[in-house]
Amino acid sequence: MKDSLMALGMFLMGILVGVSGWLPVDALPADLTEWLLYALVVQIGVELGAGGNLRRIAGSFSLRTLVLPLATITGTLAFTAVAGMVLGGWSLADYMAVGSGMGYYSLSSVLIIDMKSDAMGVSTATQLGVLAVMVNIIREMTALVCGPWLARVFGRYAPTAAAGVTSMDVTLPMIVRSTGQEMFPIALMHGMVLEVSVPLLVTLFAGL
Image (cartoon, rainbow, N blue to C red; front, side, top):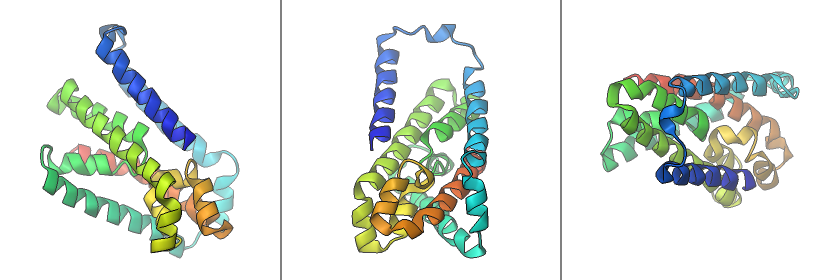
């Protein structure tokens, strides 16, 4: 919860700085977003290889462990498609790109802005990127707050599915407390599979 509030606070601070005009945006390097994207991709590799989690999860891997992340991806994309058709305002592909963040607000927003800037302009692409940040932060915070209730009502897999990518880090303690220690490797595997899927899915839909 603390990490989510900190991320939200930094996001709001960025908005205030941008509105105030204090930061000379025109003085920033034109390819800054692209390099930030490269840094985030490197971070994914470091997270996957560090801490021994990769070896631990590989030892418990089976085809059954892929059912939950695949169900999460399918459910997220289906809900996103329905929400996009109801809300309108953006194309269905744009909404799908936003939903494909799976809770990974930093990477998905940067990818969307980088890929959509040429097609729709930097300003409009930034608006879509901001939407991706807000949607995926709300997903993470909802999982943190409602995780125990989801476990009681919908079963022990529900908090992990709701958490998306964050089931491997920020929301993991909540998942273990709500559903038991046996969910630890499942939640880790779930988060890792989704983390790999995010750049692939966001790139796919943002390119349509």
